[in-house]
Length: 152
Image (tube, rainbow, N blue to C red; front, side, top):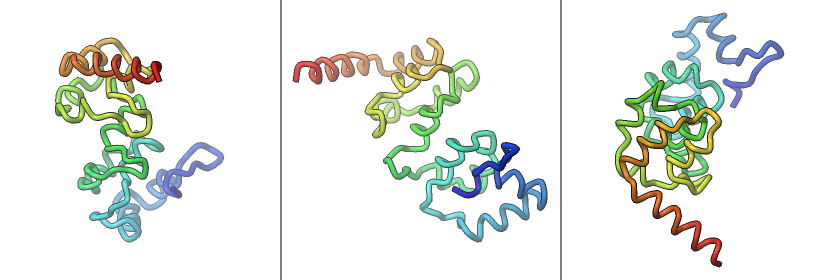
């Protein structure tokens, strides 16, 4: 959206607004357009287009954490898809993942979280190990799934 479009110097409209008007005034205007109880998956957009500002938005739109985007992705799946999370720099993120989140296929890639992480350039083995150790049966499910697809 407009908030995260960049100008010729690489700054977003959001960043320019903060420079000119400050954080509080900027969010006062944003909240007039996007109310706190929005059904717009604003946090998905922030994590994709301006991840360094996720805290500014998450504290103002806490219920957006539970929304799904237009592709059906949860916020957690969107975060993993962006490749900004690895166990070494945010271990609690992975430790707090619930069993159903670890076992849920990403609706865009049709992959389990361990595979989403494995396919990212920024991933590391400890991230994949932690995810698989919480539910080792997912590897076997994935192997069966891909074997069945190749057999067809």
